[in-house]
Length: 239
Image 1 (cartoon, rainbow, N blue to C red):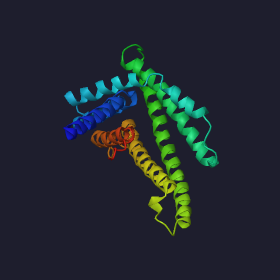
Image 2 (cartoon, rainbow, N blue to C red):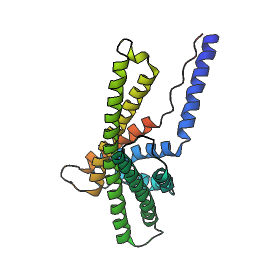
Image 3 (cartoon, rainbow, N blue to C red):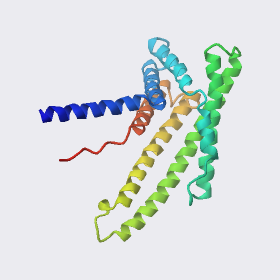
Image 4 (cartoon, rainbow, N blue to C red):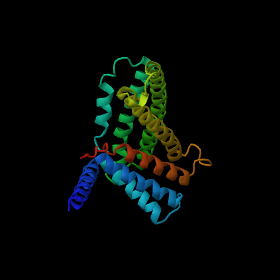
């Protein structure tokens, strides 16, 4: 009986975490993003059901991002952590400004594609400018993550020397730095993938980055985003 109750409690806890996860607007947006790019991979730019799903999901995602540029502005004016080198600070603020600009311009793209704003040529121009802002922000993100990983690596090596007579994995500070390093590595991989996705959306290299390649990479990037939004695992109780 106790085993059944503990199993039920564990299931209830998992469902609670799932509900909390799905209640996040950001999580729902990334799930829709996975559907969008998965459809792009299937359609390969050809007309049909998959392309219709791609376009419909893309338009629906823009609703999630209405007024989201405020988040970028908030990050832009927020102070950087003390001790951050000036080049990384400038790159980080450039990234925030570019993302805020992308999200702001993306609202006009939504107005055009939903039929509220009728100037189709201007909407296409605004759409390309916004994508170039996103492309530039992914490059800035990659450079920031590379710089921060270098700083983390140096501090971890220094800590390893201090802990040479003990198990470094038993040290809480070392484990925290290792987790932060792993998180930044994942962010670096995602930023690199998103750079190629942006190149594909802008058709800067149509022979190499085809709609199918863009869809596949966008789908992988979306799964990484979904993983990054997962709540931290809860510690199981021991008797």
